[in-house]
Length: 310
Image (spheres, rainbow, N blue to C red):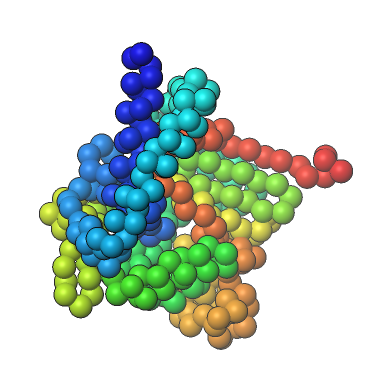
C-alpha cells in the first residue's frame, strides 16, 4: 500500500510539473538548461505568470481536460516500470554529479604528448571567455557574435532557440555571471578528432522577461542560479596549438588572426578558410547541463586507434 501511494504521488507530481512548466517547455541560459526549479545546485527561483503568452488560461483549461487521462497513463507506466526505474536511479546516483572529478593533470599530459605548445592556463582562460561571450550574445539575442567558434550543428541549434525568443518577444536576461570553477574533465582522441571537455560551475541571475512590458515571466533578478556545465571542444587530430593565434580571443580567426566577420558558410572573410570545423583550432561542439542525477563519464583520458578496428 505504501509503495502504491508512492507511485500515485510521483505520478501526480510529474503531471503537476508538466502542466506548470506549460506543456514540457523549459527555458533559460545558453541552451535553455535552467528549469528554474528553485533550490539545490540547479535552478534559481522566483515565480512566473501562468497566464502569460507562454500559455494562458485557455491553454491550461485545455490541459485540465486531459488531466485524468494523463494521470491514468502515467500511473500505469510508472507502476509497471517502478522497480526498474528505482534501480536505474540508484545506479545514476552512484555515478552522478556528487563530484565531477578534475582530470586536469592526466589530460594535460596526454595533450602535451602530441602538442607541446598546449597550455592549460591559456585554454581555460579562453574557455571562460567563450562562456561569457555565449551568455551575453544569448541575452542580446544576437548569435552571429559566436559564429567563429561554434561547430555548425551546435550553432544552428542555438540560432533556432534564439529565434524562438525573438518570435515570442521574450528576453532571457543573464546578469552577474561568475565562473566559480573551471577544469578539464575528459579527453578523447582518435585518428580523426580530439575532444576536450571542461567542467564549469557558475553563478548568475537568470530570468525571462517580456521585451515590451518588462514583466518578469520566469525566474527572478534577485535570486542567484547555481549552474554546472560540461563544455566539449573538438579539433582535428594533429592540429597543434599556435602561439600566435590559439586561445587568444573569441573574436579573431584562429587561422589568420584577423578580426572575424564570419560568413553564413562559416568562412573568415579575410582568408576564406572555414573556421568552424576544428581544422585549425578548437571549436565548441557540445554543451551539457549537469543536474543532480546526470550520469557523468568519468573515464578521464581515452585514446583510440581507429585503425585497430579495421
